[in-house]
Length: 91
Image (cartoon, rainbow, N blue to C red):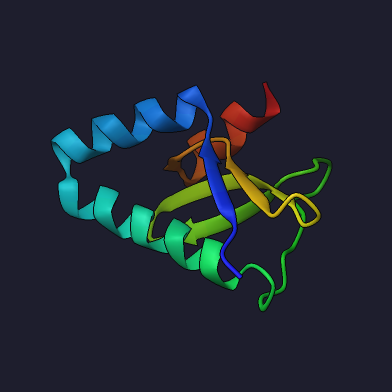
């Protein structure tokens, strides 16, 4: 079953910037998010320490997300390079 994906304003802005600068990376990230939405029930989600978030990896990029199993929703919070993503998440 496919989950509904919701993007935070911060994630949308980051993806728009990536699409302008490096469209192939933005495409890879969107493909990975779509894969997550299609396979959310079949994969093991590991919570980030000290948060309620999970993290999807796509090359150098990290995509922290919230997973609502009952509501069949995935909320993409941030799209950024590794260290930057986790710094932004802690704010």
